[in-house]
Image (cartoon, rainbow, N blue to C red; front, top):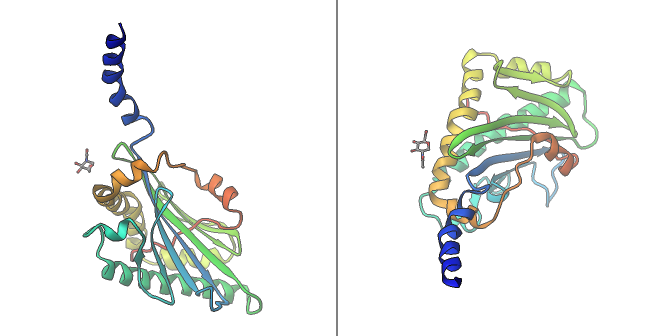
Length: 228
Ligand SMILES: *[C@@H]1O[C@H](CO)[C@@H](O)[C@H](O)[C@H]1NC(C)=O
């Protein structure tokens, strides 16, 4: 009797944990720019996450995308020279946008913050969500809508930003393609290296941006992933 039960358990055992909640993965980026950098606070910082694990960090001081463990040990997961160059390019667009907003509001006094959050999700290897949003001084600023497709301003100053970012039709198509094709493709590639590690970290919490916003207080959304 006991041995029958045991063999049943052995049969059921491996099948159960494998597919529960596994198969959900997210690649996301958080960009933060400040108008008044200090010694300990660089003017621009970017952090990439795989699920809720930090993947790499970049800032305006080092100007290098630096992977954290265990990703730094995974030979070939990314070309870190190229990634650094990409982040440098995004930094300059991001900081230019912060400057535009400050000019619009004549915000020359005090310190101001611009944040971007963007990323994509895969569920069972299928693209299951993407987002790209920005906030200025903790208030929603502009957000990409993939259905339109286009940038949806959430702040008077964001009309100018929308105009810039949609100056050419191809910019919008690129943003959409980034979210729907490039980002999921990168995530699939990273999973070839790091899936086993992520699976060991347990179930990621997949928060919708709104919930994330509540959790992080004024660390709002956004993204500066502009791949143009
Ligand atoms: C995941 O999807 C991609 C793109 O559709 C495909 O090339 C790949 O073979 C799929 N991988 C698995 C494990 O199904």
